[in-house]
Image (tube, rainbow, N blue to C red; front, side, top):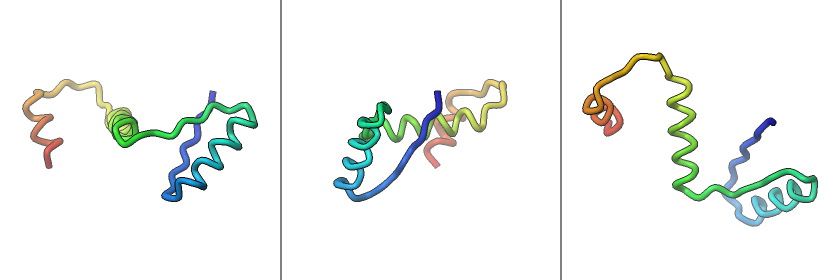
Length: 65
């Protein structure tokens, strides 16, 4: 399975793309702000994965910057 992400600011165009995707038998979903943030965080974590463990306090300090 392959995934594409399309970002836009015009909600009517976004809905049009979702409707077209569904007519073409694609699954389409408009992300809310929390889902978008979760996706971005997960993607960033996957790109930076080193296999090393760090102190949770250090992680929170880095995330707050």
